[in-house]
Every structure is written in C-alpha cells, then in structure tokens.
Length: 249
Ligand code: NAP
Image (cartoon, rainbow, N blue to C red; front, side, top):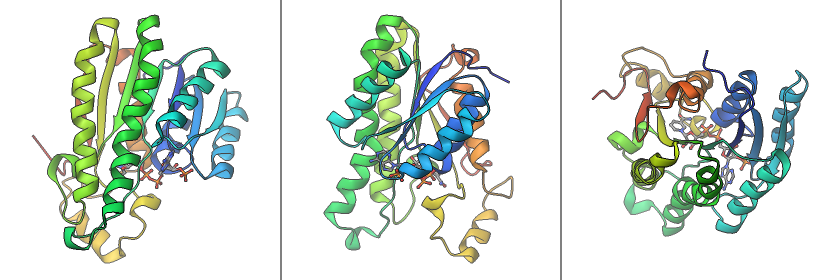
C-alpha cells in the first residue's frame, strides 16, 4: 500500500461521496487532511471525527472553491493550520444535466465554475508554495464523460475534458520542481451525484461495463491515493481511468 505518512493534503468536496472516501483513505495511509466542503458542515465534521477518533489529523475548512478568493483562502487556511500543503485533490463537482436545447446558461456556468474553474483556482493558490518546497502532488477528479462524452452532459463533459487539458498543461509547467499533476477518471460511482438515475437505467449500464459493476468510492480513492504517493513520482500528465473497462484506449 502506497503510504502518505507526514503528508498534508487538501481534498476539495470531501464532505461526502468520492471526496470523503479519498479523505479517509489518505488518513488511513498517514496523511493529515484538510476536509473542504461548501455547504455540508455537519457531514464534513463527521469526516474529521472519523479521522481524529482513530488518531489521525484533520480539519474541516469551508470554502466555495468555484470562487477565486475563497479557494485562495482555503489553501491559506490549510497552510496556516498544518504548515504546508503537499497534496491537492480537486474533487468538488456537480451536475446540471439536460439536452442542450433545454439547458440554461446558468446550468453551463455553474457546472464549469464548480468543476473546472475551481480546480484552476486551487492550483493557482497552491502552486507557489509547492514550487518553493520542490514537492507536490495534484490529482484532478475528471470523469469518463470528459473522455467519451455523454448525452445530456455538454456542460459536465466540457468541464471534465477541460480538467484533462488543465492537468496536462500544468504538469508540463511544474515538472521541473518535482510536482506531478494527474487526473483520475471514474466511470459510474453510487453517490448523491448519480442518485437520481432510475434503478433500471443503473442496471442497464452494468451491461456496458466489462467488469459488470459500478465502482465503489473506495475503488476511486485507492487510485487517487496512488497518484498522490511517492510511488507515483515518475507519473505526470496522465489520466487514470477507474471505470471497470467502460472506456479503453
Ligand atoms: P457528491 O457526492 O455529490 O459530492 C460532491 C462534493 O462536492 C460534496 O462534498 C460537495 O460539498 C462538494 N462541492 C460541490 N460544490 C462545491 C463547491 N463549490 N465548493 C466546495 N465543495 C463543493 O459527488 P461525487 O459523486 O462524490 O463526485 C465527486 C467528484 O467525482 C466530482 O468531481 C464528480 O464530477 C466526479 N465523478 C463522479 C462520478 C460518479 O459516478 N459519482 C463519476 C465520475 C466523476 P457540499 O455538500 O458541502 O457542497
């Protein structure tokens, strides 16, 4: 198991779902975790308790990461609380699905800002300190939708494809300072984000997944933890799919 002992991580959108699993997995591997949330304070505090109850270190930090100033304050608060940031996981995300003719301009803006601008905001805020310490791991949570597209998700797919471009460009910019930037692309994961899909559609989706099941949040967290570890020090600018084989190549 790739260890993260003594590393300090910021995980955005860690109050539930995949972000929560990443925070818990990081702590299990020895990292100190800044658990970011936007509105779910109680859930974020529960994640912190789950970590501190077993001797780990964590703190919940509220910030709407789609907002440039608040993202900056999140990174600042993490550095102030824990001394530095070694790992940033840009996980916060949302959907506002609709076919393009029914999609409102606001649905486009909210999804692009929450999923893509947020990651740029947090990278922008953290990179200077990572360059100074000549160490950093940035992991962006993209999606199979950003690779293959998905009807009803022009906004979401564009945001997730954008994250892949951001990942590759930033990876090139900061490689000389031993900072790696990678993306993890989950397929279907049962969380609040996918909870509105009717059960029959969920079952039908399984027929398209070679491994025959949805991912667990832990499946995704293990991949993120690996990308955030020292074992992944020679991997940068890559997109690791965690989708049961849904998209290959
Ligand atoms: P989720 O259960 O809905 O959780 C979303 C998290 O993001 C929550 O903790 C939420 O916190 C946070 N968040 C949303 N907007 C935010 C903002 N502006 N600032 C800070 N935090 C914000 O979703 P999930 O399924 O775990 O998704 C996590 C990531 O995985 C997303 O980027 C998603 O696109 C991606 N993904 C998910 C799937 C899937 O099948 N579930 C597949 C591929 C990729 P608050 O409640 O406090 O706002």
